[in-house]
Length: 599
Ligand SMILES: Nc1nc2c(ncn2[C@@H]2O[C@H](COP(=O)(O)OP(=O)(O)OP(=O)(O)O)[C@@H](O)[C@H]2O)c(=O)[nH]1
Ligand SMILES: [Mg+2]
Image (cartoon, rainbow, N blue to C red; front, side, top):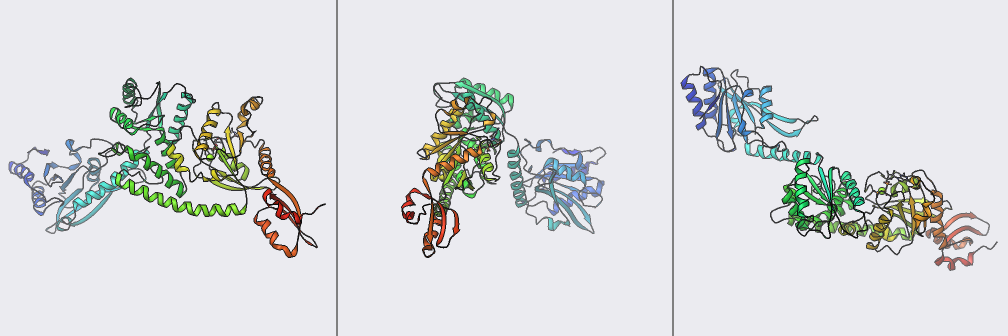
């Protein structure tokens, strides 16, 4: 057994004593023993030099050195990877010849550098053995360095009572939590890949550009993009074998950590690609789900996203465990809020059940809410449209509110409803909804059905279109497809061609409308917002009548009913009764004609 350090001029019997330290054992879970401490201190007292022993978790001495700990190198115990923050499994116990057992700065820095389970210094004071101890706290300071915990000086019999196993488990757990956090913080380097299929209504460049925006929104850095023409996707790899090999090379060259496919992958395609390429592979659906998970704000929104994620992941769990968990955190593994997605099949089932129940409960309370709204008779107008069309900007502009609007995809996830009074005093409720997108996964539409109930309940849909987008026809089509899926395609629609300020040529407006019923506006500059409001008002007026009524004072119930119907525009008190200007739904007209005041 080799003793390290400066051994020149060391007497043979000292060397023998040092070598004998290798034979000493410490019970598992205990930091040191009285015998080991005594032997080490005896050598120190003989030589006036520091003795250090390094023990593994089995309590076996794996290295002995004479000199000072700061210069001791332990090559074979060094950490293999930078990202692995866990403790090394080795601890260092050393003597301080001065008898001052406080840990020195070099002691603490080697604890940090070599990630020891703990660092102990021992010495003798008044015939007693005392020691100090330091170990990782498992917490990081503001500047990103690991905090240490120090203990002592204390008598060796106290130190011997510390449960090293427990200490290590706790610290490692905390460190592991840090390392998942830091991998999530690390920007993922993504390669995008898509297959161009003949006859697709969506140009592959557009689809890929959108995928890049989605990746960007999710926080990935896109380092390359590949497309391939293919009649139909490969059953095993989605992409052709040649393309997969090319990708494998590029992933190495570009140090990519993530591959994102533009279409939904089958669980086995995803699994095969991950095995071949050695990086995490996700598809458009998982990417969208990830963005939703980051953006959902309301409790129900969060639950719905989590439900969709769990359902999506369920068939993707392989027998031995989840590919995603094997490959670490980041995009595709993040749940709503602070949570990390569940990866255990059994727990997923019970969680799905749990969430479904919670959502059910909320649905009930919402339908009560809706009933109340219906009774109030205020019509509901829903803003629908492709993501980034400007729905939230429009809602803000019209209602003077501050709904989050941003030049990112899916800025809005939770529906917001605002009260709005139109120029002719017609009141409406205007609701902003999640933007739609092409290839919006079926599961997601289903998940969002509940929050999209506003769309299903609406009396009028405002389909907001970004008319400056070259691909507007395909976007309109995608929105209509989702509306169909929501069974809301039969509703009256007014097309709102937004971002008209971006249209250089006003003459193409007519052409863009394609015979659809629509108005051109700019939510940004405010252009034609009054025109839009008049159109909305016009829509409701067509199904309403205006009347002036005189209701005798002893028939107050009629007035109450009018208020309930939210039909009253103006009230005046005359000698013979209440004079009210009303705007009545046609269906209610007959019951009030007897009060009508003919001029
Ligand atoms: N030039 C121009 N930009 C606009 C107009 N309206 C909205 N925008 C911009 O378009 C971007 C998207 O606007 P949002 O209101 O967030 O779009 P959204 O439809 O709510 O998007 P999601 O919530 O993601 O579905 C923002 O950067 C707006 O500033 C407009 O009339 N003209
Ligand atoms: Mg929005």
